[in-house]
Length: 64
Image 1 (cartoon, one colour):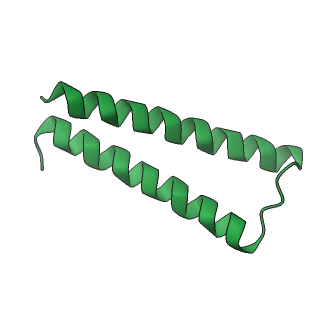
Image 2 (tube, rainbow, N blue to C red; image 1 turned 120 degrees about the vertical axis):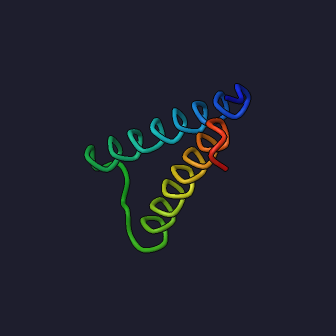
């Protein structure tokens, strides 16, 4: 196992989770008006960070 890749994976995952939870909170509180580009931009950003975290985890486990 490569510890650097694992630590990077954990950091990206935590940041992604915090961002997703923050967006959900703003959306449920009515603070965020998710329309059009803002909505799809947020979905794309969260998806990319999730894929990045998975890729880093696979690098850490030696599967890639």
